[in-house]
Length: 435
Image (cartoon, rainbow, N blue to C red; front, top):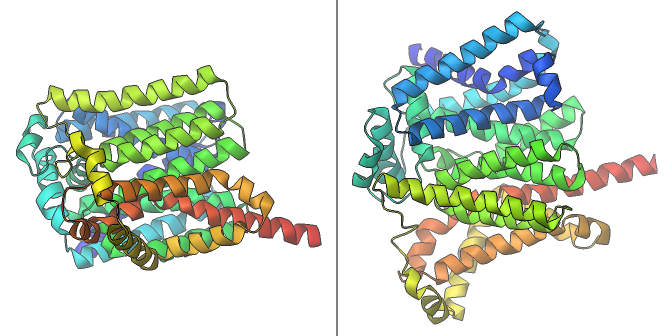
């Protein structure tokens, strides 16, 4: 009972840390940003995560980072209390109770299972312990697969220590909060109707949730950060308002993708590529975006090199002979193996199957097809990337595919949810016209 109380307390605290802008949305400070409440919530959590990342990259200890970030939030709240009148109406907080409640349910399930995946025990937990124990960043070189990105371990250690509890899963609870927050933000694209939005939120969380995603691996984080990027990508293309603020949010998400898993570099490259194609801006503006992204990736490798950490993207690949290996593996049998596991993954993850069904229906509507063109292009690029990765491996392909494809397919799958949104919007427009 005592442990359940602390889970409730910690989960509620984590949720409030994400949602605190809703208390101050009528402030002069936040009004000047001209962002919706949901935008402010997303901006808040991405700034928190990026600030935590930067502090750790400066080799600041987690204990010190906790003090600095706590001081910042206390100071900000104090400042807003002094400057403006705070909106404390319970009615305006009601839409966020479901977010906190689902986060609590998932947190209880995480605490009830506690099983860590092999990768989590051998790769991610040792990195987490380095941050948790305030060791030097260079110590990452002494862990398994030191070349892997490590932001997930920073979050794990930070919120584990912030909870002041001995159990490591209090750090992983924040993975669930970020997951719920990304789905919560996505659901608001379905309109302003309170019941409709929250039904979509609840439905998608139930559709996707499985403890499998919270066993200490990092795919759920990349899935969530990529979904956030996809939301603002969609809005940039179709809403065409507040371009710079939405681009800023996308780049905050991309930076976290880069530092969470090595595949995040490839995923974010696809996002930036599509953004420059579909965004109606001049060449100079697009070139600037590409340059900013290139600098972000360069800094990732430069910082690894500075701390003496292995900079290789993967030790399972022979990059000098990558294309030679690819063409030697390019045969019907290997492609069949990969396609088989892609099909199995689609059945394991219902949101992928549902998204593909919606995407198939959209193919027969010319207007919707062109509206969804960037989603189809992302689908082709993501699947092609997965196929290329495994055909380029010098290892046994069936073993590599059976142990890793499901996870990489899942973390790349969140933009597929936009197929559901496009089809849903069309049905709503059809109903309005018929009425």
